[in-house]
Length: 410
View (cartoon, rainbow, N blue to C red):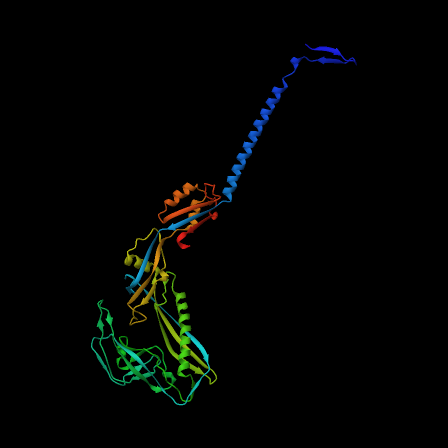
């Protein structure tokens, strides 16, 4: 019960008993406990938030490297002779591409021809018309495409044709020296076909072809080139023509075809010389006949000849590294029915895998799920995943942060 007293100023004062006070030490302990709980909860909340942010930021800026080894099979050719045929149903079909070009050089003349001369050279005569031999007399007339005539220096016997094991015609052939009928430089010709005057009706099967440049023809008092300079200029022009023709042929061939460096025939025509005493214009026209094959047909040949087991989604590598050469020149250069080819070289068949698509497939997956996905791809021989930071167990969210490396191609 409260007692009311008056202080010295006669103001009533409440007198409180001990029962009106709570124990101060218990209240302080309770407040301290609440503060500790609040502090612990705050620390736990901040720690959880920091850990979450740590992993979240790590995931956002993480990168991954996926090393893969594609399934593969090796192949090797060693002087393997293949018979190619122009028909599309053959074991190895081929196509014929022909391009032409002309190259010119300005040359200062180094000789003056004081007397006219006749051009001389030699030709190979072919007979795919009959099996009987043909006696050709001395003075047999040959006609070039520019109607320039030549005569044989000697009499020769032209054999008849024979058949090989595949029943293909092997023409009979003989070489003979020829001389131009008329004097002058017009009779100078390069590689060319000539018609035998007495066999014009059979010109497709009985004909001649130069096996060297027909040269030496000279006009009266004409400025010209010495044989040495002429040979040098001709070689220089040939090199320029071969390069330009090969590039030109490559540009005309569709992407699915392959042009091999030893799979073409270079056919230059005669060297033409004209101009003034100060400068001669030397030109030559030439053609390039290329025999090309489709990439898929070569792949088919590799599989059939070598009996390799292709991996899943096969992609042939090293086909361009194969050396493919003509065993011998065909009789009909522009329209041969068959070609004997020699294959030498090696390469690989590997599985094709779209690395960009693969990166998209494994992005944002748990590492164990990404490994499970990679293990299910038959085109892969093996794989390895590395993530930065390395404490993460989930792949980067963006495929752009995932680098897929083919171990065999590096």
